[in-house]
Image (cartoon, rainbow, N blue to C red):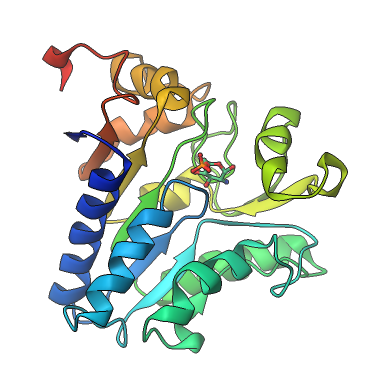
Length: 246
Ligand code: GLP
């Protein structure tokens, strides 16, 4: 696991955009695993800048997002589908038919999960997966206690996660109670992973991930068993780690 210590959010975002842009340029048909939340917003901004400057094209890229709320349609402003188009896809040349997110309004949830995993497999697997991290160490919506073997599945969101994500909704009641998420098994099959973290609220999860044992109680800890992971984190997110560890 490589750890890149950066001074702030902007530097983290820029560094992440450089790594993703490099893979998009180098690979013939790059398969991107993408994330939502406040963490990757800056990275998308820098990727758009690079596209606008003619440095990178997403024409041959395919994308698979980590997660989506159950019950929210693609045009619902709080859906991850909406977020992705609003913050990234609408501003670059990725083809709509190459964009994939779990279908929030699927009626057969189990089948929708199987289909999503199959689609990733058919595409040849994810080349580079971007991850954020929850304050409790979750990745995607894989909450503490989720078996490491799980593939894409539907989770009941914990109250703390609903509370944390309620800032994007007009009230807590509106936050869906369930979500689709790629499982840890799915995420671990990605050829390369970059995990981004900024701010003090993530310091404890990052310290546990880097210094603690690999345990299902801290989903992100499994990343230590992956051969190609880069953590890009700012000073605040690394504040509970001695410099000797980085
Ligand atoms: C959410 C998402 C995760 C995200 C995490 C952190 O619950 N499902 O994919 O990484 O929380 O979000 P943020 O980047 O807003 O801190």
